[in-house]
Length: 290
Image (cartoon, rainbow, N blue to C red; front, top):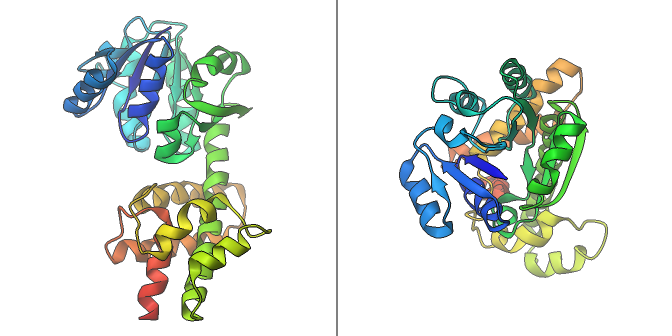
C-alpha cells in the first residue's frame, strides 16, 4: 500500500521502518525534519515537509505523536493529515491519547469522508524496534480488518476492543496494571536491600513463582543497580495515568492505587527523574531510606 507515517519518535521511527521493509510505499513526516531525513537515509522511502503532503494519495496514514494537542496539530489545518488524505482512506492513530480526543478526531475525519481507528501500543521502544508490539484497537470492524495485515508489520498481536475510543480505554487499563506491578517490584527490592539481601538473587528465586512478571524479568537488574535509562519515561507515564484517572472520574471507577502511584511518580519528577524510565519508583524509596 501507499502509506504515510507521521511522527518519528523512539516508537514511530522503527515502526515506519518495519512498514517499508514489509514492502509498502512509505512517506514520513516529522516535526524536526532532520529526523525524517535520518529515517530516509537509514531505510529509504520518502519524506515530506508537512503532514498534508505526506498523506497525499495514501491509503493509510499512521500517526504516532506525543499527546492530544500534538495529535490535533498534525491532523487539523491546511497542513494537516485531513487536508491531504482522499475520501475513503484511513487514519490509524498509535498515539496514546484521551478517549475523548480519539472520538473528536474520528468525528472530524468522518466529516471529510475519512475513516479512523485509535490504536495505542504496548511493548516499549524494544517492542517497536523488534516488531513485536501489542496494538489495542478502537473502531469499526471493517476498518480494523483493512489495516490488520499492515499493522502486523510491527506487531505480534492486535485486537479490536470496540468502537473508537476503546483502544485508548484499553491502554489505560494497561497502564493502571503496569503502575501497580512496578510499585510492588520497587517496594520488594527496597525491602530486600534494607534486609541485607542480594536483590538479583532474590528475584531469581521468586520470579519462578506467582510473583513473576515482565517488569520483574526485564527491569530488576537495572533497578537494583540504580539505572533508569531503559524505557518509557516518567513524564509519559504520568500523562497516561492522568488520562486513566480523568476517565475514572467520569465512569465512577475507583483507582486508589493508581492515584497513589501517580503521586509517587510526581515525587520522582521532583528529584530530577522526569526522563527516567518507569522503574525509577525504586529511586524515590531509596532516597527516603537515606
